[in-house]
Image 1 (cartoon, rainbow, N blue to C red):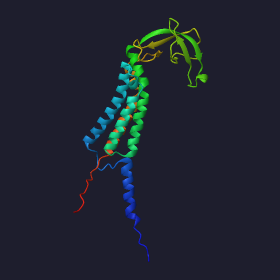
Image 2: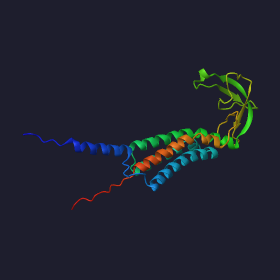
Image 3: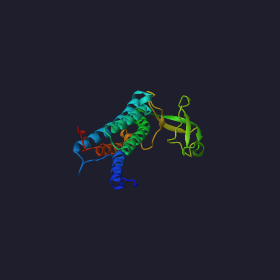
Length: 230
């Protein structure tokens, strides 16, 4: 008896379409996407980026380590990914947005500390006690251990302003937070504005917003569920 085989020509296109819809989203619209869908993606991405950055800046300003260290930002990135899963966005786009959110959360704490120091920091002179060269430090930069005017060593080592020509006994300018919420750091020669550190996060934030817009737009479905015949 000859065994009947199901034609593959009809099954394969449906399988490929299903995989493409699952991975990248169905995007079931013709022409430009609906304006409200673009607005929904912009709102989700902008809100996510703002909360990730805002929690870190607020944590550094008011002295909440859990917020300043970026932990809350990671939670916000996870919440944005969950939202995209709820709207049934493509799995690849959900992963990309989640990765961008995590990268932004990891980049934000340093920028948040810089914002606090640029806004309310005070500059003082410290004395170099020892210098660790770039090869020994393993970070590709010179690190200076310093002490304040009273001879009390600072708990952090300074790399801004510390270079090959720096030696023990030299004076370095550092900026510190009078409230002690963020650790001191070397003064940038050109000066730093409060908006400067946040401007450095613009690329990550823009990528997060763009990824959210694409994910939400491609999640659009025109097909409705057809009721089963009775």
